[in-house]
Length: 125
Image (cartoon, rainbow, N blue to C red; front, side, top):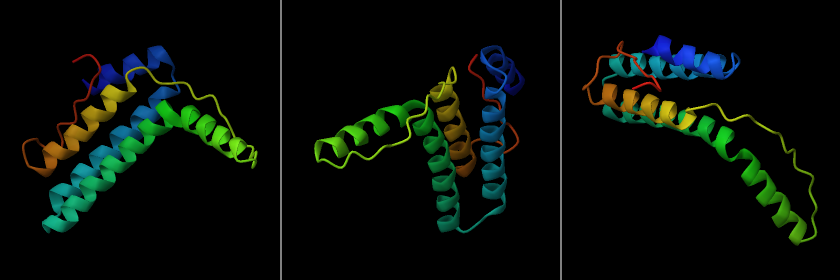
């Protein structure tokens, strides 16, 4: 299924495969560390870090331009007129679905309902 995800992303734009590879690698590494960690407090921190990175990437791709334009308007309204860099970031197809599947994989591994090596995330499921 992971291979199908890469094919799907490559059809939308080959550069998005790098994003997919990064998210896949990050979540797989988080699952590996979770599997080898026993203290519950540390496990929670690992899960929180994995979720924060996943949601951070999602926020950049989905909401960056919205927040930058809102901050620019707010600064302009109080007379600060701070020039904020507004970049046009292409939104990868299915990024929300893939992100939440990756989060559920890490959470499943953390509660031991999924094998840490069974990373099968696909927008086709």
